Image (cartoon, rainbow, N blue to C red; front, side, top):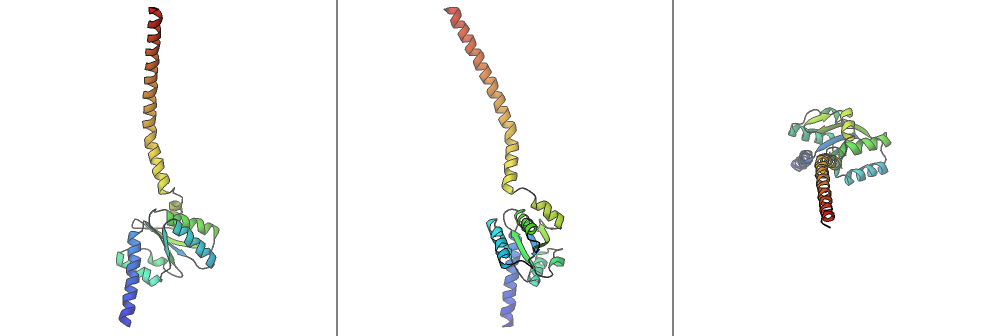
Length: 178
């Protein structure tokens, strides 16, 4: 009986470790004071952005962080804690958490974790204000495309000017021949 309990706890720790390793970012929140409807709304927003939101026991999260060598988050694992794993976009968990916390004072953002670094609240806010990955890619591609498009326009203008000069010379030769 005791062995089964230990195995189930270790399985839970392994699940948390797997999610941590697969996540682009992590945000720890205190959800105390949110109504069931508000938590459901928050879960829906997370799910739409491919953010995995779970409530685990603090001891299980602490053990998973320790086994992975993640330091600095154990101080935030006090009281009711939920964890949001940003699976695709590093800013998505922070963005949704920050936006939801603005409208719902009961949601408290405790800490974040990105690329091996624990994020403070100002850093989480800065991450939340970043444009989405798709917008950033579009901006970079637009910036790369602008010089090429300008060069093509210059070449097109030169070629069309050359064609007009040839057409005028041809018209002049026809008029002289007639």
